[in-house]
Length: 321
Ligand SMILES: C[S@@+](CC[C@H](N)C(=O)[O-])C[C@H]1O[C@@H](n2cnc3c(N)ncnc32)[C@H](O)[C@@H]1O
Image 1 (tube, rainbow, N blue to C red):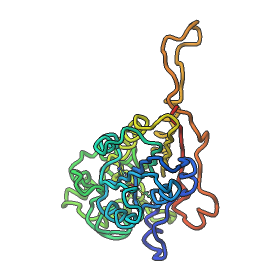
Image 2: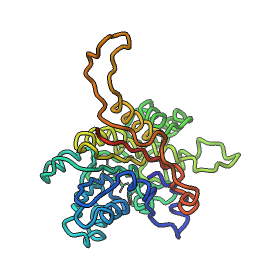
Image 3: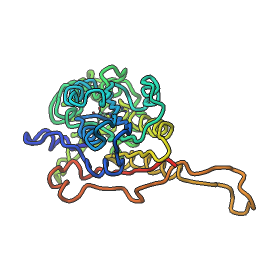
Image 4: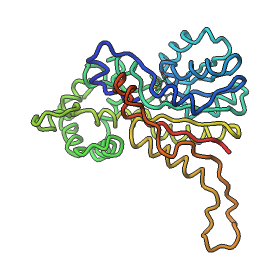
């Protein structure tokens, strides 16, 4: 979830709220006896709702790459007993996890991608530019690359490329140059340091609505966690494990992710791709998916008012043929 860290940290009343809860679970249409995979447990809101709606015997296999999220959900979902199977894993490996559990296919897959409020709230995880902490940004603490490593070791052009591609940051070159200059004086190890370096690239007037380091932090986070690569592999995995009639629902929070989801669904919903002039089909291709959401489902005005972080959420779903 791309919560705005400014509101997540400044407003102490804020707490983790599941986004598009009923919309996403409605699209999955859980039923008793079904088996569902939630690849992004986070605070467990969607998984719990799927368990409730698939009672008395539906099963949820819940994954999160973050050990804290797994711990939290093991506790909060203990009441569901063996109906909630919780594992620490990256959803890009969902096929391997299911096969290890002896589950060949599932009735639904949910992915609600990005970071959670829990990540942004904890300065020690290094996701926030508003509270100083180590420049880390790994969702999986066993991950090999931290944001500090990227910032201190990547050639300037590569750094600029990451900022442009994953942050859509217009000042990518200037920021990369400023980082290169700063790190020649000493390592950049703290979120506060990086936020300061980036802020100095922007003119102070007119004041900006969002913090100048927002897109830089987003870009580094995506790179550290290979979020787009994981999403592509997660979608392939979902398609492979869904039963016919099974559904996949994905909530994303920025255009890069939404584009991947949209293109994946459209591509796999295509039938014959032979040139129209051919009298008979020789590609043999049949649609694997039916798209259920022609346009992405967005949060209602009420939801956005209650939880501003839901403003950028886009939900898409498809059904396996
Ligand atoms: C937006 S939160 C999910 C919120 C959740 N749907 C709920 O109802 O509370 C995203 C969660 O997905 C996890 N995550 C992100 N990418 C992941 C991946 N590739 N594999 C597994 N977990 C991932 C994050 O650690 C985070 O806890």
